[in-house]
Image 1 (cartoon, protein in one colour):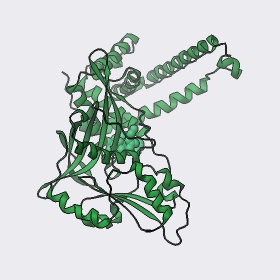
Image 2: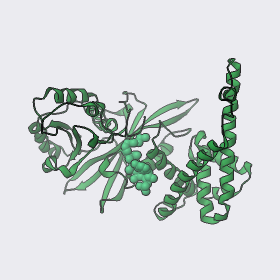
Image 3: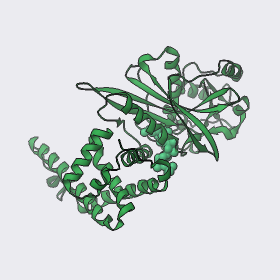
Image 4: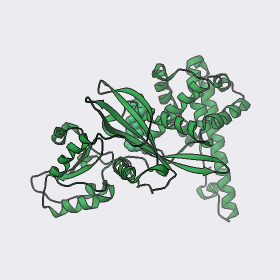
Length: 407
Ligand SMILES: CC(C)(COP(=O)(O)OP(=O)(O)OC[C@H]1O[C@@H](n2cnc3c(N)ncnc32)[C@H](O)[C@@H]1OP(=O)(O)O)[C@@H](O)C(=O)NCCC(=O)NCCS
């Protein structure tokens, strides 16, 4: 996933484009229930037509359980708007409706059939959203065992990935995909399940007998963001993969900044709660201890090798702040030294490669050293700020996650 917003705000566009998850008929006309997509589709962004005094509006409404969809506009019979709707086709769920009445008649069906999530329920938890405690359930499903109705349902959920993640593409139907879906559960008095988000994982084979799961799409819909639900989905997803499959490591496809930070928090919590006995080794500054701990992060917690040093430094900052803040300077020097030697190694590697191909090295080409102390200082400062930010969140939310369970 190329996971980032394209930075275009809907207010910069000449078309108002909104999404709405409809729980009851009235929600369809409730502007307060609308939210903008995470990214603005190019066709909307590019629209520059003239619609007179009327601000054109395109709305995507989804029934909150079945995700059956209505696309509507306030401007009928406008060729340019109709063309945009056609062009949006790729991002839209298949079999969408464009007649409000057809969509509304699905209301009875939505209740009569009592939508039940696909797959196996693997966790129930509660979270406060907009000041109110709500109950959520997470389901696991597998394309290897999925019927056509789930595949179609997945295509509807996937529209949220296309509308929230810049550059996201639909996945192919392959038995190696598995999907974690999250719903809010509402007792009305019958149970209703309202879609909140999902994540897809591809299970790569790793010779000879392991799998290497890679998290691909990961979306929490905007009304539920920043309430800790993404963190919980990621925790449950990782634990389930670890408990269920013989895995080598869990990777993520091109994470965006927000996801990267969320994953740092979740992985640091995992390290600190699963193996508190790592702490003395982490605080010990011997290179052999660092090597041993980072190996364990990979072997026992399935953190990818290229991420273990990052997690080591992050958790070390947390441990130092909790036990002996006077050691921060020592840690800063350690991180700066690590960045420097890594950059030197990368540059030496490149130089050797260039020489082999008869090219001038970076130094010769630039007429100055390829990396300067300033570059290293900048990289260090940026990284340390990120570490401090995550550690601050870990400390402030400690009562929520710190229940040690060393095996
Ligand atoms: C990224 C995403 C999955 C996070 O889900 P969420 O439920 O909002 O995350 P949480 O509330 O559990 O956040 C946990 C932490 O992650 C980080 N985080 C989450 N969203 C963030 C954002 N938009 N910007 C910066 N940090 C963010 C923060 O540290 C946050 O802690 P805080 O709220 O105390 O500051 C969600 O915003 C989303 O689906 N975005 C659109 C699609 C996308 O970008 N997916 C990621 C694909 S790589």
